[in-house]
Image (tube, rainbow, N blue to C red; front, side):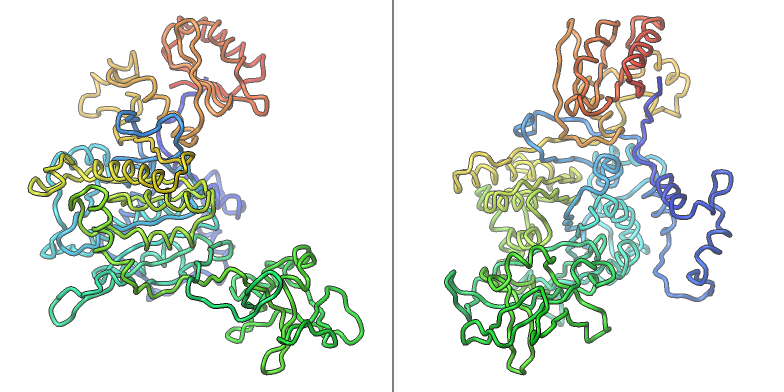
Length: 627
């Protein structure tokens, strides 16, 4: 019986395995031979001593910190959750570095969009202090103390901020889908450093743009200048796979009209240079325009997919900037169904023939300048004040700004992550957007339980830390959305988990008192932890989402957990016998062989344990593990 490893995903091992897949010849006796790797990469190796790079004191340590597995866990908190049994939304209370590490196995490559509003490093805001050796212990100590600002008099003012941000962004990138995107709010203090850091982590080619956001329409006096704006950096995980959406253009009028109503026209070719005839050959083909068959008197002409005498052959144009060959946005099969209906030929004023699409719903690309008052910080403050009937949180991000980002960056079934969640605007927006378009987006929020000031309205109202404000906002916002829309099938709940040390003593040894630790391992589950605590830690460590369906089966006064419709079967009880093992096998999945997990010390005796393993093997179940 294999013992479960108590660590989160080992990113170093994952990277080495990826290198082995790409270049098996560089592996010698299980190690990477960098001299061979240099030969394989040829001229792409940088050999000069002087080269462009972005570095700072502690960067190497920050990179290691991102790769160091976490031995912590996330303990469920049903009491402060909402709709625990039905919801697919998650709220994590704890240090986001450790939470991001713990999410690596379960959510690797599953997040469509990330939005974060991190500390701006203004000299007044809180900057996380990481501990390379024991960040869980560090987190517990830190949250018992008054949080301290990263003072401008600190000689490592920018350095500390960069060391805080780098590992978190590195881990966040792993969680994005290949077509995923990230938006990061920031101001003048660190925008240049953040851009350079993101260029390194996400790649310069994956930089989409930088939004200028009119955060303070009335301007704030910063001495010599009235500052009105902040920024939001916009990156893709992989620009060649990225998908985004257009925003409604409420003010647009229609130039043309047909039997279906008004429309405008837009070229059918895709002007994104990431899509070419080389990587999208199915989108590169000719249309044939019949110049002798006008459709009305607006300059439209009939088009075909087969060539006939007198027809004009039209391919997508090339980019004038770099001569890249564009492709169509529609494949041939889709185009054939809409010929001379939704796609037609058009003769421009310069007598050029083009293939165009009728745009009936007026939409536009999101603009890099976000200047209207709807996106101001004061609007965000007013929105929270309206929910709580008092000024409970200063300058949260406004709903409209995040609404636009979510509208652009998500599809109907996306997971949206915010690991500096503050007052939980992101959750508010996800629920509102689902109510509008019938989507099933899910949110994952992470927030440090930073204490509120004892003089603040929030503290006086009973909210002792920011997490309490965020969770209450989700409750109030969800109920308000249901009341205003009448949609009672919305997911307005959330499961709460809190960061803690492992539930398993062997995964969380006390090196200061090793003798006592070894004595305690006679029963390796901590006394103050429940079976459910252990269950969810196991889900994290084997890589299952925390919203995976779980059925509790009561058998002979013991609980069997059926996870993911029989894909994982667990019994974390004491006094396990063969009857329990036989009952577990009745619930295995019809479509896949299950993992079976027991508590290491749970069997009546070693003989029963041996017989249980053999019984499972006879029934084709070989993945048997213990904790």
